[in-house]
Amino acid sequence: NAGVTQTPKFRVLKTGQSMTLLCAQDMNHEYMYWYRQDPGMGLRLIHYSVGEGTTAKGEVPDGYNVSRLKKQNFLLGLESAAPSQTSVYFCASRSGSGGNTDTQYFGPGTRLTVL
Amino acid sequence: AQSVAQPEDQVNVAEGNPLTVKCTYSVSGNPYLFWYVQYPNRGLQFLLKYITGDNLVKGSYGFEAEFNKSQTSFHLKKPSALVSDSALYFCAVRDRRTGGFKTIFGAGTRLFVKA
Image (cartoon, rainbow over all chains, first blue to last red; front, side, top):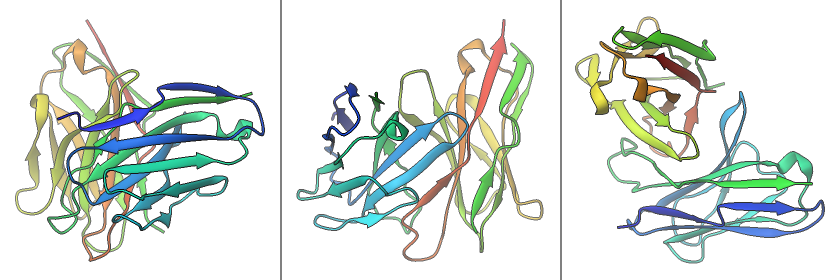
């Protein structure tokens, strides 16, 4: 049971380049999330999904797109990277059962630098 | 607007002394409350949560948290700190109501335990 995995672990982009971050979970969870972590700002929600084929905007969605074509995968795309998107990105998942009491499981993070 | 406040950026404590990491929240209704810990270069790990019942919740690694409804607080505590407890701690809240998909995180408090 690998839990939540993220690919890649590190990436450096130039302004205007695009990339996709992959999150995979093997716990059959319904809900998946993408966060960014910046110093002094905690975790901010970018996008989330409550099931296969569904996505929704979070707190800071601009400049990002997501897709959830398969239940176990949640992809985060940057179409045209900007220096303001330099951050550490975390994926998380939770089962969606238990009336909102269930725990979130986090991946190890992707450190992205945009030059 | 819903929010979570962790008023201290950093808490310093000597090994063996008790520690407290503070958290207050402003959320309508009675939310579910969580604490997570983040070690360097790792994702967040679940410590404990308050769902209902006893105001004192016990969690992993000897941590506990006290829910105070009148003060809307959920402070994290440990009777005797260890150097290995040094990490970044996040308080989080989630709506109880149906459709409470999102979890709101505080900005985090860095705990330093000195030997």
